[in-house]
Figure (cartoon, rainbow, N blue to C red):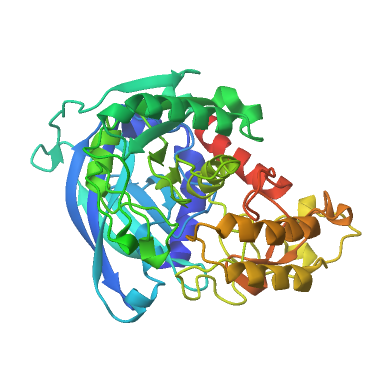
Amino acid sequence: MNSKYILFFFVIVSVSTAQQFPQFFLDKTLRVDYYHTGTKGTEIFALDKIYDEGIWSGSKTQLLDNLNYGEYMIRVYDTQSGSMIYSRGFSSMFNEWHSTDESLAGIMKTFHETARIPFPKNKIQLTISRRDKQMIFHELFSTVIDPNNSSVVNIQKRTPLFKSTKIVDNGASDKKVDLLILGDGYAKADMQKFRSDAKHYSDVLLEASPYKERKKDFNVWTIEVESKESGIDKPGKNEWKENALGTMYDTFGSARYILTEENRTLRDIAGQVPYDAIAILVNDNRYGGGGIYNLYTTCFSVSDVKGMEWQMDYVFVHELGHSFAGLGDEYYTSSVSYNDFYQAGVEPWEPNLTASMNKENLKWKSFVNSSTSIPTPWRKAEYDSIEALRGKLDRLATDYYEKRKPLYEAGQAIINDPKFKNIVGTFEGAGYVSKGIFRPSIDCRMFSLSLVGFDPVCSAAIEKVIDSYVK
């Protein structure tokens, strides 16, 4: 289907279907599992299994995506009327891997992925589209699903393997954001630690603005996932654990990046409770985490460095900025495994990154004072020289934090310069690149490794996502 007609169709039907959940859906979840395979220039989808999975936790009124976040977009059409009845943006491990050296070398790889939608009453067409380099969506996959065909939809009920608890209860799931916290690398003897960790991180999130002001819009669930061993895999050190969810460090060659490729296992376990967002706490001591939009967040939960425990709180909230709110990384001096993740001169979809230097076209222009210069000057060259020295340090060395301290403090002095405080503009350097991509403020939880809050643009984006679940 031509992308320009998809956009037109979306505008026409969004008004007519937004309030018609009972017409098209039952109050439960259809889980669609599929395989996503490819390499440079190739992308293939193949249907795996379809499940009837519990109550629907998402909004029953905002069925069509009005955020336009994510690398991909799921669209669901009622085959009888032709109406689009559901859509949701997302990103994936595949699209991150697609920009790594491994993919660019022509190596083929397969990821298992899941789409969760309200359970349709009648036959539907489900499509998956991806943005091109100009950010325009193009359809890559389409399948017709008959939810009333028992040979198609697996309705077998799985006995929960682990204990689940609702630790924050603010009401019905369809009117709240349901955050699910799981643990990985927690052995049976570690389960009390997991309970304590889950409560701690739940509190940390809901005490950070703007989540703090929206606390009543959240439910928080936990599932006490038991691993056979404590800790998770560190492939770079040839350390392997029998951890239930398969999370590991060294994802895409980055020592601190924690993800899992065991999607089916994760979804089988998570599906025993209603959820909109997943956070995985890993019972290990290396600094690390990860977050992919509408997939999940990971965060380490053991600190061996006295006085640096706050970094775990930073990581948890920062990574949820990615997975829950679609925020992009605003830092640009740390090494990553991606190649050309953002295209020069092309506006990123993330709400807190821009390639624009035109104040009138700026996506966050409502936050910018008329006297603020665009681009907004700051002590970038000085900051970059400090970060270059820090980048030469071995992050895994035992004396890393001792050597890092004076450089960290020097960098913080620059970004805490009073003359930049409370200014929203376009500060060059963001999205892993030094030139051509801009962030809204000099500092933010998405920029520096500190407990600084979210800047006004990021805060507004988070609130917009919360609204998409609860209003």
